[in-house]
Image 1 (cartoon, rainbow, N blue to C red):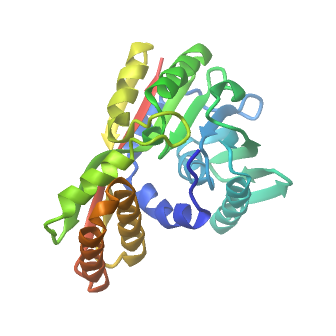
Image 2 (image 1 turned 30 degrees about the vertical axis):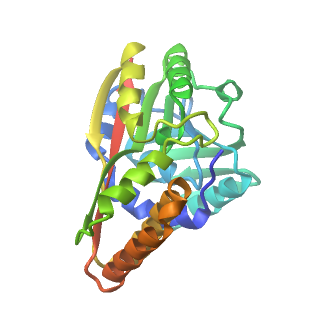
Image 3 (image 1 turned 90 degrees about the horizontal axis):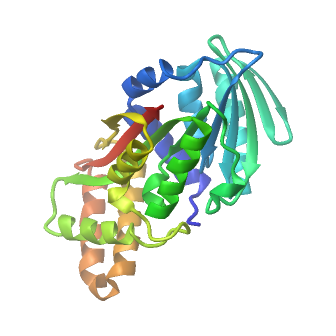
Length: 289
């Protein structure tokens, strides 16, 4: 399974939060039972990484919640514990930590967070909450159509609502333009289709495939765009993206190294000169039965 560093996840978190659609979460809330102390809302977060999905969703959902963060990377789950503890403390919430769990009590929500190191390539290893919520962020473009179909089946069997956020959809623009932008991004999108550990990845087709899969299982869906808008002062994320696009393009077309590195140098110069802005398209999907 492809991995991501805690540093990369921390870098993108504020842009994720700014991009996500609060309106679809407001609609989701109307179709998910508000958790109580006696019956908290059970949530499983697939590919939870460093926990940013919980930090975004938990205050919006409100009430009592019990989260299970499922990820294969134990180091990222450790980072999730540390980052979420610090986040709760900054908010002024009550927070207590045990070895692999947190308990948070805020003004509008209470949350128990458990970390579950698990191989997500086998969904049978994951317990889906009955009439709870299954969520993931920035995951679906990495998975195969077969994996996505099994996810929809498991969610339907559990009668669980879903919140599947920040699925990359290929709509990327860079300003000011360079002649090779479209070609480089086409190479990146080809690389997105490589196997990331779940079988041939859906890449930019994932959001459309998710709509079809969940509709086929009877879900009522709401969909909204959640694009990153990265301004000229946001050098760190822009430079990280350029490095990632270059690395992917070189894996697909190593024979084009000279042209690709020239493009990369020019785009970096735009960033460092304060001239560059990027937008990267994503889609948020929520659904219920």
